[in-house]
Length: 183
Image 1 (cartoon, rainbow, N blue to C red):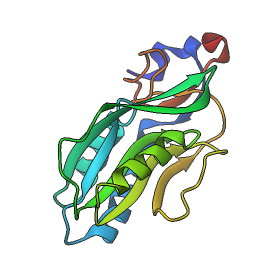
Image 2 (cartoon, rainbow, N blue to C red; image 1 turned 120 degrees about the vertical axis):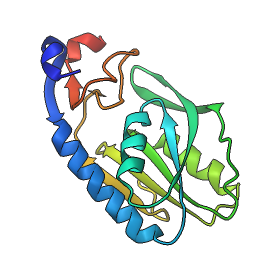
Image 3 (spheres, helix red, strand yellow; image 1 turned 180 degrees about the vertical axis):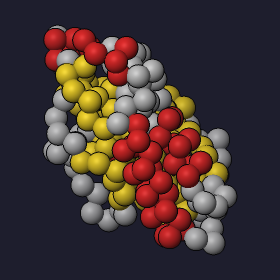
Image 4 (spheres, one colour; image 1 turned 120 degrees about the horizontal axis):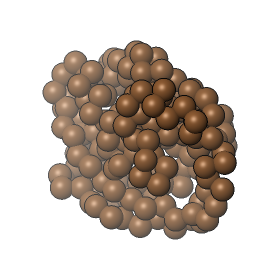
């Protein structure tokens, strides 16, 4: 869906589809440089990273395995409470494998910190993070290689897989949702 179909719902378009796909190609090339000669496991975080994960895997110029996890990060009024619940676990063994966690947006860092801790217990060879978007006050993961598409400002971002109450995932761009819609 194009942004012009929901213009009244959006405050501003942050990134066009063309900008996103160009950066996805660059991220795939960065990751391939790091993992050349291996078949890494890209673990997409459902549902916000589904579009990004698939596009990243398609842009990756070598074989890659795709796996999925679903988590629920509990919050009140868009603030993380510190609680994460696993909704869907991996269906692949990552012992001794190179793992790339793929997320659509790192907002507070709570979910990513939980994933890093959880996956490290499964004895992968390495773990890296690849996020399309990163918010300004996000926790940084000093010991983990992190590849970021774009640093973005505050606001509720929708589109390119990211939703608000189940809507807007199919926007081809990334946009800030109009604040009055989140009251």
